[in-house]
Image (cartoon, rainbow, N blue to C red; front, side, top):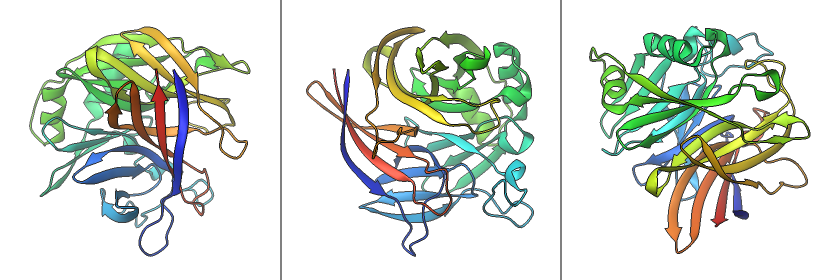
Length: 296
């Protein structure tokens, strides 16, 4: 694979406020839904502009969260957002704290928020990790399952991995209905390393034939909760748990482009057109929307 950067756009709302901490992107109506991992609202991006969309009520009076103010532990930390086959959109928290164990299910008429603590507990059992080590950062629909990716921390011996969850069961819970959520299909991946730091999955999109394309970052962090310097990023093509190909992402202004969210915009012959979002790690700096082309 070869990855080309076609365009980049700083994302701001109509009032000039930056879209901060973009962590996922998916088709939503005629545009895209971008989730922010440190805010209670997302951004509906359409025709080059953004409008806010409330996903959660304020938490202890806060709509944005950061470490400096001591509110980081309160943030919903939405890290994955998926366009569903029926036209709805599902956003999911990362799972490392109780505040991050919720789902948001969006349709044209409603925004539903549901707690998923039992689902996250089952995932920790299946992956054999502690609850505070959960860092579920990407998801996609493969067949009748939601494939949900645990970023992990390869440099500390915690491999990046995924589980499959029966889609109908998790959507039932996200809709507020009682259901037994079925978790299976554990896969672990070795995506290689950059400067001695292992690449770990940050998002995923399903392609034809059961293939999955993931974005990955090599982040030199001491824990799954804390941030660290990102020394490399890439796209990887997966067939089951087999890594078919890995392509490094081009730098932006000489810096590593840490892709947090990835979505498929379309196909052109042997080309994939993708959109991706990058978190600037600074709430005053707009997150970037990238247009990428992948050549096989």
